[in-house]
Length: 63
Image (cartoon, rainbow, N blue to C red; front, side):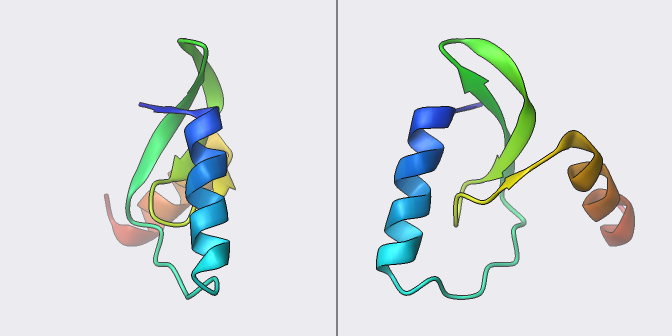
């Protein structure tokens, strides 16, 4: 579980580091003020994904 405000900080750190390539294997569901959001975010780079995108990535990885 990751707060949307924390995702923005993660994304800014990633940008400050030069935005290197990210495999996005560290996904977690976003929450806003304790309420579940429908999006997921990469805890490495801060990129956000819809539930459908996460499902497609997991299917492609065989998970």
